Image (tube, rainbow, N blue to C red; front, side, top):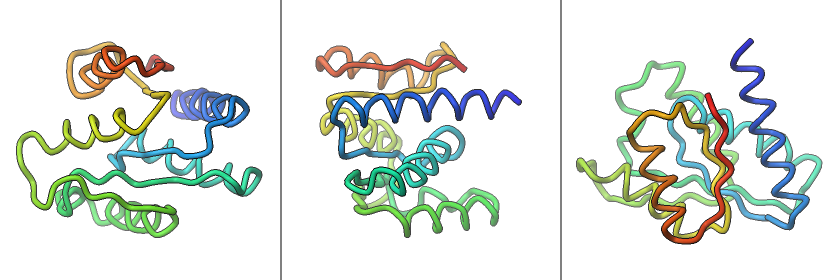
Length: 140
């Protein structure tokens, strides 16, 4: 049930962004909330065909350690994205944050599902705020 409520919040934030003129969305393609976001934007493209979706991939090996089902889900979502940007040619300890900075640097709005704990999402929210990017923080 919690996932359904989270998906509804993400959908509402994306639809609001579309109504305010956002036409291009970028997804970090991580498991969990990123997949929800990607699936929601792809669904909304049916109603709003002018919007585009870019997959921001931290490195080519991003899904290698995931389950077979998650790797397949990733591949299927990636195939449906309009654009694909690989931020680092190979894995490095900082490639995930580099991907996050790329997304913020190419955005006017950050939609983030955040549990309030320190980590990548919190760092990305703080980076966005420092850059003057508006943030929709969806608590999880």
